[in-house]
Length: 212
Length: 254
Image 1: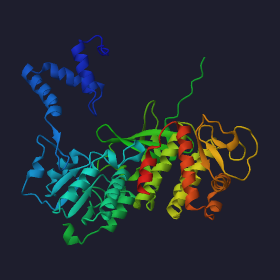
Image 2 (image 1 turned 180 degrees about the vertical axis):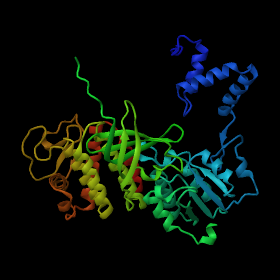
Image 3 (image 1 turned 45 degrees about the vertical axis):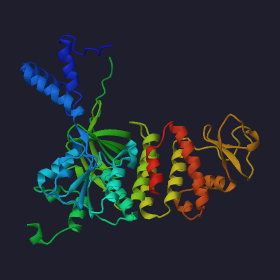
Image 4 (image 1 turned 135 degrees about the vertical axis):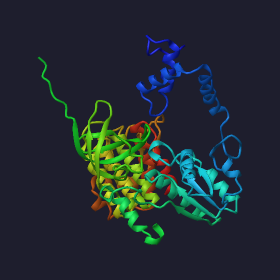
């Protein structure tokens, strides 16, 4: 059965495209309509390019067998890069976090993507995210000396960090577990900071020479 | 002529944050438990951005003072300030997992926009004692029994569910389907029961009749608490007609 046409006054192809755009996060009905009408104005080649790119995203992208990041090959570009530090792994929740950290240029080690965080109330436990893959990776690679946990700084992210720490503290392969520092964001006013952030910022204060 | 009643547009309330999930680009939807309005789901705009003024003030397992602008479908949270962030709980994985469990139970037993002062204050008090006490398993059992009592689901603990006769001081069966004790001799073969010893029955009765100050003085023993855990898990599953998600994580961590 074909889907119901929600815009009967419009050609079916256009209304279907609007509905498809609406599936994307942050796209409401108005934006979806604007995107659909913009697509209509594009040349056939451009539309074909977009359509191919959309199709390829599912057929050509797989997960790296080491770090679980998205990749075109079984091992991603970051894992194959010999210039990176193999002894340190940064654990992040989502693929987007890898790109944010890469853009900052602050980290030159390797990554591990969990694809989520522990959220018991939403039915996401340790088995639903890629913690087992991280444990196997660390246990099979004696070069790894440190894990930097860069999960989000909310309760789910903290629970995930603590759970990973608990696993490795019981493991025979002793490695250093660190967590990203917490503090006030650049450009922010102390007036609006919350108690928890101030507590952490005060606790991990540094010598003024180091902070400049 | 129909009387026109202007709807209240704003709400300021104390609330405990039960649940959260990401919404749109940088927003989150929080499930709040309030004393006078039950469960309210609110959108916090832009809260995922590091520079959000609200981000650090609102998270799961926090008691907050929230300023909410009420909408027809979803309400928006316009301001929030922390009352208690439960810092002690948040430093310990086992306490966090208990916290998740208590929050989920409250969500299951509460109704949207339906006031239930008792559940709210029971949760608030239980989180406070969880911060100050080390008797975690006992706190969880006392929390469950009291929550069942507040919600009107306290199991029958004195008379046989089938015969109605007063039960003697011995071992009996617990029916999670019908919610209470059954004398072994009246048990039907079609229902599934959990065997429950006399010490566990006494413990259930004591927990249902007493507040935390009295309960904390009693040493029930690990075996009794384990038995109560099995009974409560089955019974709560039956009432809520669903699995308690955080229970799995709780069993794994503790």
